[in-house]
Image: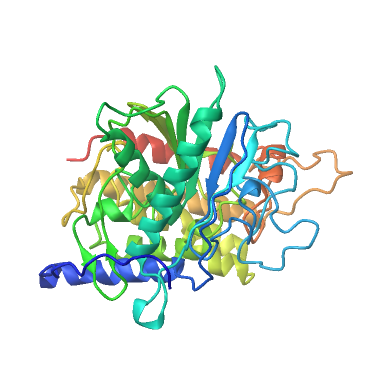
Length: 429
């Protein structure tokens, strides 16, 4: 369906050890797969600071749901969001909302949704393959950028933003511009913003397993975002995002399962994400790229149980210990901006690991006991303050961004983040 497909590439010979990698790749692809009409319009009429926005798979126009409500907004407003699996933010609080959010750094900017096929389909059925879709997306965003740059006045900026596979399109465009004869153009006026980026240098699944090819869907793992890009870039991802924060050590099956579950609960929903919310690790700037890693409301492994209404106290009891075991599948001492492929054997100090696990078990017991204590009513002398802080009760689903800003994190939540950051700072031997 539309577009000229690339000539078939010679299949890569995959070893037995690499077959499990392909299973993971196909699983992640299935999370993102969609069969939608191919729309490739890029009509532009721009005269000011401009956002060029590209959605992910299943969202070729950026309207289903609307991309401008990403990072804190409600894309279904004024209708009610009926998908309990994917909570959203509040209309008018989206970080990209150029019309309704005066707090947005892009308030008042022009916003153009760049259309593209946005498919991972089967060419034999008349659908776009992954590679064909990505190449058409690259042609469309390149045309959009070339159309907008001449319209910018002094001090004006164009920001090209992609989500999920749309981020891969942006990465391809960054490479293309950087490799042009005479050097990259408009480095002072063009910026990039990547959400759920599968090319994130440390964590992106296309960099974890570079050089592989899934012939049926024509998926090619094309490696890292160019870390030496001359363009100012923001890369934002949920911790554990299946596309952007895949485990470094896939032999940790608990970490892999946790990451794959995040495909539905985290990667598929950046509308609930708060740019100003808690960080899983401190923000890092490497070259011209700033990496933001947001802490999820819960470990993805447990999100289905929270959703089903499983007793919160029991989930809080096991979550710290499970988090430690999942984190053995990562090495947070490696910068998000350092291209890192998957490794076989984690280098974990057994004594340190045992201490971390015991501390986490103790933290879980402490939180469990606090959960069982009655929460004072609003007329109680103690008010809502408890041993765990002002927000003793946890929602069964991730909080909306506005709620996370309005309520102070629990004491145990802070301790949990501090302990994890402390572990990340220690050199693993």
